Amino acid sequence: MKRISVQAQDFDVAGEMAALEALGGGGVASFTGVVRGGDGLVALELEQYPAMTQAQVARIVDDAMARWPLLGVSVIHRYGRLEPGARIVFVGTASRHRTAALESCAFLIDWLKSHAPFWKKEHFEDGATRWVEARAEDEAKAKGWGG
Amino acid sequence: MKRISVQAQDFDVAGEMAALEALGGGGVASFTGVVRGGDGLVALELEQYPAMTQAQVARIVDDAMARWPLLGVSVIHRYGRLEPGARIVFVGTASRHRTAALESCAFLIDWLKSHAPFWKKEHFEDGATRWVEARAEDEAKAKGWGG
Amino acid sequence: MTALTIVYFAWVREAIGRDEEQVDRPAAGARIADLVEMLAARGGGYAQALGDPARLRAAIDQRFAPLDTPIGEAREIALFPPVTGG
Amino acid sequence: MTALTIVYFAWVREAIGRDEEQVDRPAAGARIADLVEMLAARGGGYAQALGDPARLRAAIDQRFAPLDTPIGEAREIALFPPVTGG
Image (tube, rainbow over all chains, first blue to last red; front, side, top):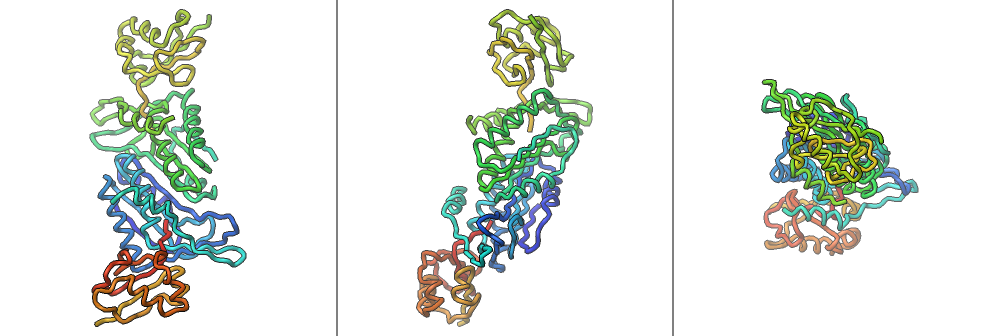
C-alpha cells in the first residue's frame, strides 16, 4: 500500500491508521505534525510547488520502501492556511518488523522536512509575518540517513 | 499527560492520538502493535503479572519522561486472547520536538518488549500451542538505550 | 516467620500446574536461585519448569531481580520465562 | 529556441512580486547561477530576492539541482529559499 496526498483539507488519522493496521503487519508507526501555537501566532501558511510536490514526496516514499521491508506507507501533507492545533503532516508506516516501521517513519519525516518543496510563513496577531527559516539541524538529520 | 492502561478490551487509537495532539506540541509519534496472522495462527494469548504490570509500565513511562522533553505519553497494553489483526499495544508520545517524540516512542516499545511482564502464547488451528520465546535481539535493543 | 508466596507465569506455571503457592521461608541469606533449586528438587513438573535456571527470570515483590538476589524480607517471589510483551 | 519558464516561491516570490515569468533562454552552457546573476542585475525586488545566491535553492524541471547545474534543455527553473516542510 502506498498512499500519498498533498491536500488543503484536514485528514482522518484514524482512517489512515486503520488502513495500515489492516495490512497484516506486526506494527504501525506514525508521526503527526501539528501547528504549534504561542508567541502570538495566529496561523501558519504553507506554500508548495504544486508541479513538484506530489512527485517529490513519491520519490521519498519509494526510497523508504526500498530501504525497509514495508507493507504500507501513508504520507499526507497539507498546504494553505493552518491555525494552531491543526494537523500539518501525517506519516504512517506498516511492517512486520517494528524497527522497520519506526525507523522508516523517522526517515520519512526527516526527509520531508528538508526535501519536500514546502515553505512555511508565520502570521502573528499584530499583523506581522515571517518566513520560517530552514534549520541546519533538519538538513543534518536528513543527511544522517545517507543516500 | 500520562495515560497508562493494561486492559482486556480493544482501544480507540483515534481518541489517544487526538488527546496527544491536543497538548499543543509540534508532534505526536505512535506505534501500534497488531497480532500477525499466518502459519495457522488462530489466536495469541497474552498472560500478565497483574500485581506488577501497571507499576512496571509506569516506571518505563517515567523513564521516558525523564529522558525526553515530552508533553504527554499514552501506553495501552492488552492481555487475554487476541485474534490476528487485533491490536495488542499502543504507545503514543507528544513533544514540541519531533525527534523526542519519535525516539521516546521507539524507546518505550523496545522497553515494553523486554521489561513489561507479559508472556505470549500462540494457538494454532490444529490445536497446538507454543509460548513465544524472547528474542535476544529485543533484549539487545532495550539495552541499547542504556539506563 | 511469615510464609513466602511464590507465583508462576507462562510455561513455568503450566508445568507446575499452579499459579501460586506458599512455601516456608528459606534460611536467612538464601537467594532466589536457592529457592529455585529447592523447588526443582520436588521433581515432576517442578523439575521440568525449574531445572534449568538459565531459562528463568524472577521478580521480588513485583520488581525484576537477578536469580542471585537474596530473598531477605520479600513477601512475593515470581518465577517466569523471559518476558515477551509489546 | 523556446523561452525558459522561471517560477518563484516564498520570500523570493514576494520580493520579485510575481510567481512565474518567461525569460529568453541563456546562452548554451549557462548555469542556474548565471541566470540568477542575470536576474539579480535587474535591481529592485530581483536584487533583493536573488542578490545573495547562498540563500537560494533551485530546481530544474521539478527536481532539486545545485546552482552550478547547467540549464541545458530545461523548460522550468524554480528559485526559492531552503524548504521548510514537514
